[in-house]
Length: 388
Image (cartoon, rainbow, N blue to C red; front, side):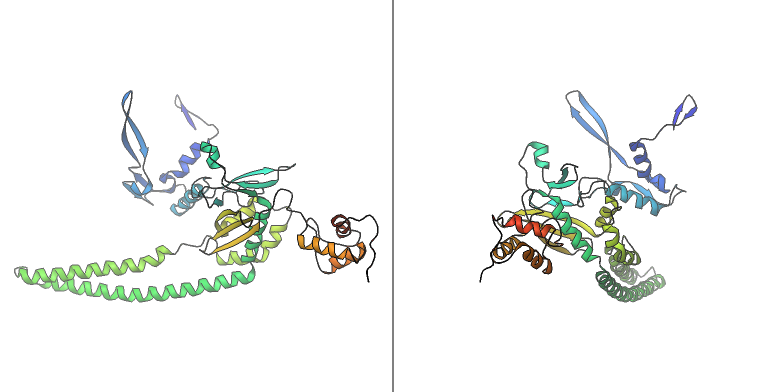
């Protein structure tokens, strides 16, 4: 909306205008004062005055529920937290985008601490690759690490589906229930201590109030006792408030976790599932992933930091380009040994019965990939001859 000569002209809002509105405490019905400060700057042209925005904890006044807002104060705080979490830099992981990369904005380099950038390659630009190239982009420094994203995404996906299984959810719910019961016991004990401390403080005040003001020695001693009782009340109140402040509210209700556990694998594997839904699920359960390359073992080392504070380590082979769909070396060696004593059809049947797969597809029958695998892995000029 724009005022021109007293007339109201409507126009399409910009991102900055919307951001200023939803970041303003007035939007949530709060009064705020002292959000900016004046700082003097010096340059070749002389002294200049600059206005800087203060951090929220430095404001002079912030009083929620002062007037009627467009949304409630709780809703305003939730919106502000969501907007700040969508920042793609810093400690936040960014908003989920349309790309297939599962860990976009969540994966960080162990060597330099920077977040890994995501790029897509391939004929259809759908193959993700994670690389630590921020130093190179900023000041021409060397690349830290880089690896293909398909295998990493698959490993994290399997770990996530295992964590959000019905059994894991039941165990997590039981553990959370036990933790709540312990916190309730501590809270009850502290509540009794607080009641006793307040009674002692009230009794000390009555003694001080009944004392003769002319007797300064007695009045001074009673006042000191009253002050000590008040300090003790404040200490107990602080202990009572500490467990509640240190225990964050769950982002998702336990009932929602149960529904998620029963339907997650179906939703995840559905071809119509949007990549952003998968990323939202990942962001609900995973705080961050720290990645490194073990050059000696030729492995990708991943440390998954789950939201609950638990950490798990994953190690994956760091294969070169084109090796993701390659057949396992053990299967190749087995075919090389079998080719000396068996025909292609018999080798394919043995591989099928043992559930061994090629790198790209499952082994289905003598006329399928396994049959071709036997011919490709161990090529021969003539039919094999049985020995013995």
